[in-house]
Image 1: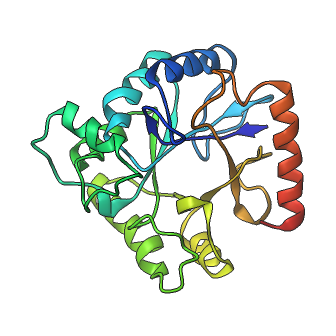
Image 2: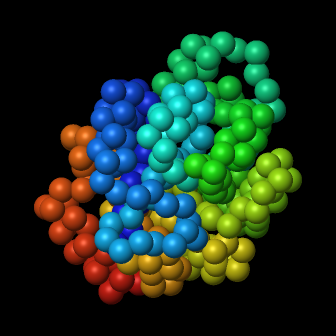
Length: 244
């Protein structure tokens, strides 16, 4: 079984967890489960793929040190238009800017997000894999969306900037159309949505991987308790039957 929790940032609110919660959560996982990145062999039992959306600066500044402390792997989904080349702002100011998102959308690009230099540092770590999270972080179900820009240009930019193959795509808001998914499958090996379900492999049905919302964690051992596992296994079966 493969469990892929979904996180956004450090802080308060429905899209965040406190740093203390993250540390307790990571310690719980590190003591019990192997963490894997897309394409890694899956051992018997439960494996965990930690996924972080949006590449906020706090991932580099606060989360990455915790991942190294506990030797945990994580997938970081990057919306390329938001990434600045560099910034002169202090870490404190950058964290403040990240804390206002999504209540106040930042300009593009924004120091609330990792810089390209910081992403290059992350890319060199065996603990981190970078995924495309589109160009502009817009729902791929939008009427006038440019799918080639969002799916392909984002991949091209990441590969040029980071000098590494990008084989994973994470749907913004977990939303997509059949047309978008057909194009994504042509250019990515692994594709994540939300779905709040477990996975049985790296491919599942229709090359879709499901994630479980882990923002605003109710306790550090969510979603690994038996009740949550049963719920998310049921969601996997329903998602598979509905082919979504």
